[in-house]
Length: 404
Image (cartoon, one colour):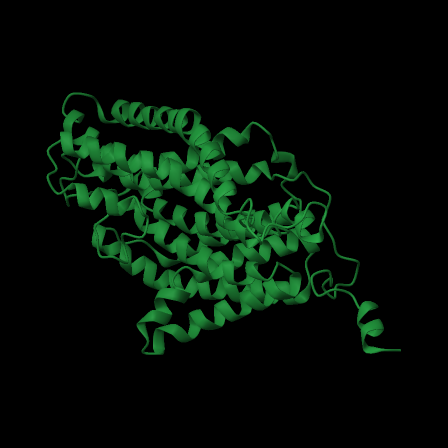
C-alpha cells in the first residue's frame, strides 16, 4: 500500500477521540447551559455585596460614613468574602470559552470575543466617566477614558475608570493564550495538553526571574481558568482519569494561590480566613462539577438567560457609580433602603445597557467584522490584458466564495 493510500485510511487528528472506557462524545444536552447564566449573576452579586457591604472603601468611616460591619452586621461577614466571586467568574469563563470555541475558526473566536466584550464596555466606561466627572472627580481625563476604551489600559500603566476593570485584563490574557490552541482547532488531546502546559507554566513562572512569564501564565488565576476548561471536557467527553488528575491539580494550585489572595485582601482592613475561603472555592468547583456531570440539569431554566445578560453590564457599572451614590445619599436615606434601591437601580441600568445598547450594537459590530475580516476577492480590471476570458477557469474562480 502506498503512503498516500495508507494516510487516507487513518483518522484525521481533528477527529481523534480521547481514550476513554466508553465511546466519548457530546452528552446530548441543550446547546446552552442556562444554569451557568444564573451562576454568573450570583458571582456578580457577590462582588457587588463585597464592595457595598463587605469592606470600607476609605478605612474605618468608609463611603457610608460608618463601618459596614456596624451598618450591616447580619451580612457583613458573608459579604466580606464576596471578592471570591471573581474566582467563580474565572472558573465559569474557562468552561464557557472552551464550550463556545469548539468547532469554530480562530476568526469566529476573535469576532465572538470582540462582540461580547466591547459594546457594553464602551458604554459603561463612558457612563461611569461622566458620572464621576459630574461628581467632581477631576482625575477623569479624556486621555484616561479613551485609553480605558481599549481594554488594555492596565499594561499601558493607565488607571482604571472603575477599579473592577482589573479582572478584564486577566480575561484578555486567558483569551490570548487559548487562541493559540484554538488556532489549530480544538481537540481533546490539544486542550488537555494546553491545560497541562499552562499549569506547568504557572508553577514555574514565579521563580523563573522572568516577569513576562508571570504576566503570560498569571499564576494567581491560571488554576481557575484551567479548572473550568477541564470541567467542560468532562461535560463533553465524560470524566476520565487524566481529567480527574488535571482537576485535582487545578484545585491544589488554587488553594495554594488562595494563601496569597487572602493576604492581598488585608489592604481593605479585612482579615479573611483561608479555611473559609477554601471552603467557598471548593464549593464553586463542586457546583461546576455538578453542572458538568449533568447533576444540575433540573436548574437549566431558559429564563436564566436574562440573569446572564445582566451580569456583565452590572459588573462594569456597579463599583464607582455605586460609591458615588452612597457618598451623597447615605445621610438622607437609611442604609438598608439605600442598599436595596441602589442594587435594584444598577440591575435596571444593566438591563437597559443590554437591551438598548449591547444587543443592537453587537449585531452591527458582528456584521461589520464579518464583512471586513473576510478574505478579499481579486478585482479584475476591465479591459486590461489580465482580465480572464469569459468562461475560463480564472473567470470561474473570481465568482467563487473566498476561502475560509
